[in-house]
Figure 1 (cartoon, rainbow, N blue to C red):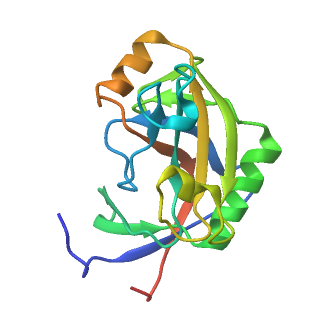
Figure 2: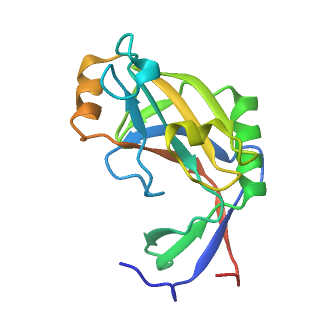
Length: 175
């Protein structure tokens, strides 16, 4: 469903109890950006061995994400760059770096956070990974420790990140 006339809401954090509490590896990322994985065939700088690493975005500022609920019907949400900064501060302060799930169904200890960063300029290393996303985008690099999960990634069954978050939404007049 693609309807730019649907209502648009900004995601907001009202207090410290809210925020991102997990990153899920999923088959259909809501932000419509897949991660990339590194194997001995993928990129020359990773040619020495299978590193079993994935890199990709988890939040993109002002990206409209289609949602549906009983209360609102179909609508879009977005993260402002300021809200993304607040979410990442809260996430870091709570020390939730290794809280990962699979398809929002179950938790896993088979994924280890290696890096998380926010793109701050056009000279960002995300370009080295082939991403052309705006400043304020948050990227994650993680190591996959499970043979089964890594196989699912290589087969394209799991191909991106999706965050799990407790937050509020407020209507915006901007489109």
